[in-house]
Length: 410
Image (cartoon, rainbow, N blue to C red; front, top):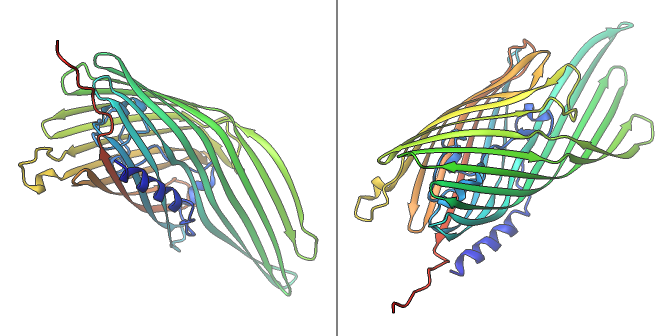
């Protein structure tokens, strides 16, 4: 039993190391960045489908009611690689890569009969990671002028959470998730004007985020082989403390701090899962309205509703000891479409993607791997088209901690 706390402590030390490299999604420059709807390779493998998906080894933070369907106390850590190929309309593509820890979680199964569970950990909920540049050329008074502007940003929001589940009546389970939102980001804009002389300006904004969020989830399993899930999350205003620094050619630096409070949208989601033997299908729908957010909303950009729809097909690994190892492997396939909350000059940004993953058991441990590939962009002629792939690896280790008391018979 002691090996799990030792591993958990080691992973906490590893997460203090900055593993983020330059690059990433240029559409994450809007709002608080790209939104992470799920955590863990077992759900990435299903294209994010999770609200009605029962997993014996996954830690489901999308719908906390599903935490109660595990069988063992588990600890989980994940790692993610992102690869982006950004292609402007003029065709000068730029490849970008980043990687980071995907959080870690602990799930304590207190009573499997009543679906009583408790979970805690940290995981990313938004991600900001972009790098872009624009160039302008002209001739003024017979002097050729060229300017180049570099945009760069990195950071995001991390959730430090506690969650639990309980079944008050047969076939119905409720779960609650509470989290503190902690994060920061750095944004910089550098402009170089090259003519007879060189002039430069550099602007840097460092933001610190604080807030809280709550998510309530429900699961109903009263119909044979069918799982019906729903969730609703609410978030407080995000307090943003910004330190802004302006640096201009031949002028002293200017630095000041401002504090703002930005709304963050609530999110509603529903999901269905249906199993037949070792196979299962599932589908999700989620919606959140970002129209009230003004944070990092550039001119010409409007914010509205974000919607995600996904579906998955799974072949779950056999849990029987006598079967060959190949039959114990699990396979998952998924497809999804996300309508981004940002629109460029009235043109919505759409994200289409497909996924594949495997569950690979090693004794009481499960190694999950997943890959997601897709494309994102709008129909605006001057917009950027992203082609991306994501690779997620999750290790989940399980043990039985809570044993029922032996009762004497009289």
